Image 1: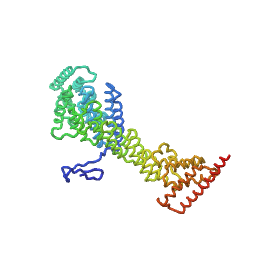
Image 2: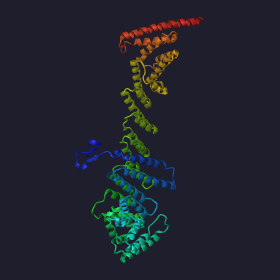
Image 3: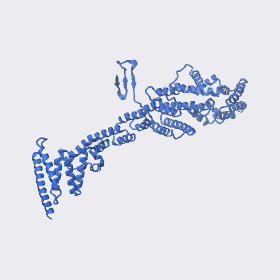
Image 4: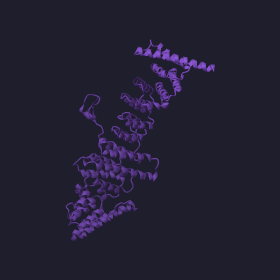
Length: 602
């Protein structure tokens, strides 16, 4: 059973009665209502659409470059979103950038793995920047209490040039230790690190690194840095001493920064398939059983193990909405980095996540328009989802209804077009806006509803003696053929227009046609016959003898059925009308006979 809770949440208690072990609280996605996230959703939508449209246009190197740029664009919009949010609220998005980048770099990115990991850590461990600014802006940086902390952070992140620059300041302030600083500076300068432009083989790199490592070991054993504990600690870090690195645990902040530092100074030529083993041992060493892994740790571990499906699964659980996993999965799918296996209900993972994300957007009063494009790029179930969600959009205004209608028409969603038009026609009719109601019913091609509204127009005319919404009725065109009643409405309005233009002969023919062709409803015949009176009384004879006989027949048909049909509301008035019509018809017939006899005699 399902119990509705305040705030749109519901509780599911399973098939049986309420059970504490089987209670699930389901709540709406609240993130889409956060104002600062609208920028993220809107800008990432543009990136997503651009990626889909260019899929077939680019190939080879151009395609790869484009995918890299798309990834950077996504990262930029996440970062921009973080800057607009308070720190507490932006933690999820800081984590999102970390996951996004590690997912990208452990897959097929250019350059040695260690360089990519170093770039990633430098990008996401930004606490040192404030510390550096504070130290460098002081009067005597080398005497600042955080000086050695900043040097250590630079070394831990492999930022040797910046670390050497700070050490040079310390050396200039302590002339007696210049040789010691020079030795450490020389070791840091000579440290072999893989680079993008370096053509040396892996063996050559390992050999150079081994020689450099032995040189560091020699200086440490000789006690070169024994007089300065800070420099001795840095030398131990250069040697990859895990205890020395873990002593700086507070500066490392996370186990994955410890992992990268450990690889940099112990296994600089690490291969992608070895990464998972170093990652697990680094996490175990860093946490030391003092704390359990956070959701982010689990996600990053899955990424280091190249288990991208597990990354997506864990992100779906840990993150507060579907935005991240939907866009990451789509990008990975375009990069051919996800196995395209079908899920148990038939859709692949990319499509499933895009469908979930787009479905969430449809619960927002304006973001639903973005969801339409996401459904468009889900080839298997997108159309079905769009049809279901588009029918649930509240049509609060006519402008919104037209926007939804345009979307449906562009996609040949004929059933939804008819449904929207009927809803709007009914709303307009309830508000007595007959013109709008008729317009919507014509657009829906709903003959029955068009007939109903046409009857309302005719009733309104009988009560007021004039038509409303003349512009619409005058310009019905072929649309009037939708129903007989609508045809009659359009033609009856045309009769009035011809009469107003004093085109009496044409008006008379049209009036007679409306009656003899049985287009006019029987209930309206008396009104039509009454409209014929002014034409019968014209100085010039308008109706011919044959036409006059037809009018007489119609009048007799109407009065003959009087006893069998509904009685007139006011018998005296109706009787007077009938008598006046008979008199006018008789007089007109006499005039016609005289006129036609005169013409024949001449």
